[in-house]
Image (cartoon, rainbow, N blue to C red; front, side, top):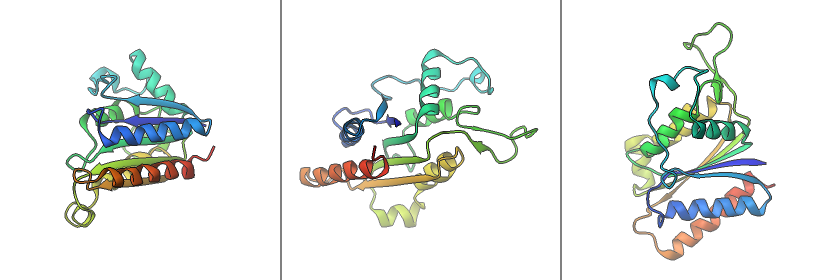
Length: 197
């Protein structure tokens, strides 16, 4: 299978990087074709310009490559921290520029954008790994777990990816090396479960 893995964390020594490394290695060991992007390392430009908005707009070569890869992907893995209940800005910009009409979704018939879109992504399964320093009860009671709504409802379901598994690892800032090793084993098992090969 073709699997897209997208990482968004600026610190190469972060636990997010460790998660992505395990995910990529696990997928490769299962003979999947992996499209891996470390957005910060690649200095991905998150700014969507007005000329890119139209469905058939000419795209810069790098953006075209990302669009082709996400179109070919039969599975998706996203890794990022929870910052203010949202993905980092660089990942939000990736969504703006790559999860675009004609690539990830389209409006049907003579609908000019006011209706319900039809998903175009080939992937039927997405796995999102998040890190946070907010306890689960507070995340859900105080904030309503916004990342769950963003990824499951606002992005993947809209684009035709109906199976979305999200795992939040917390509290990362005070976690021990032993705890992180347990979590990485869970990452490996989760990737194996959803993308068995």
